[in-house]
Image 1 (cartoon, rainbow, N blue to C red):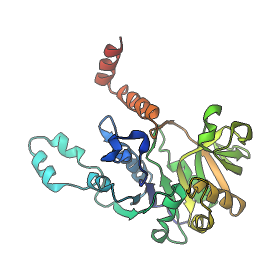
Image 2 (cartoon, helix red, strand yellow):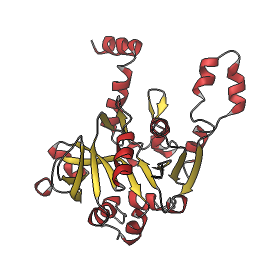
Image 3 (spheres, helix red, strand yellow):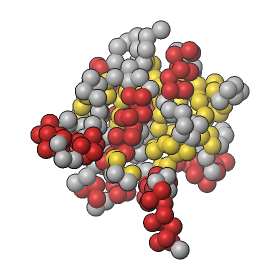
Image 4 (cartoon, rainbow, N blue to C red):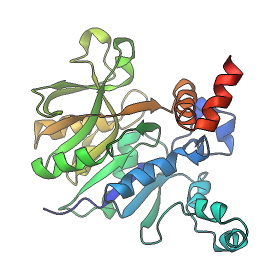
Length: 284
């Protein structure tokens, strides 16, 4: 079976919940302490075996490309006297390919994923990673999805149990039968009201998809907000080749929200002993 070597990063969104900061800073470059969200996502992908990074971006987000530039002049400046800073410039291995694709209009996640079609071979599967979903885990969050998808050759999504009052913000699955944290999906509903939710398992920002998902996306109609929803294409995949879900083994922070972003920073800060003591002292 062909290895999964490509990952799509939809980064063309406007980041309106973080205005005015996102007037000039892409939300994906907002830092968790000193490392941007998008770098965490890229490192996760590379660790899982991805060697081609496809950024679906917008004209206002050149800073993301700049962040991953090797910057040899700056490296040379730091190399002799500040080697610890030179090391921090290693944001991406030189052998990893970067591709930037303009989305044009931000018409939803499904529309963003569709822009990668010409870069994915017909016989290969690919990952989709949303940098907003910051995950801390002892196990690479993407790897179990890749393994499950390769074994079944089906579209595979990551899910976690969500509080009932928040289900209306997620695509929600109806799991069939869990086996080692993997299940077939009997139904998937985008942003249901609580009474209509088929379970408490919401889809989060990690996917492994077959090339055929592009066919479904092309046929997907825009919703009432004018967006093309990836969930609609996943529903078609479920009816066709099948869809499966993998439970997240880790802690996720929704950094698309201010609350999640602050909590993620606190979580990482508390893992650094010096920062932890400073925080505890300030709060005492």
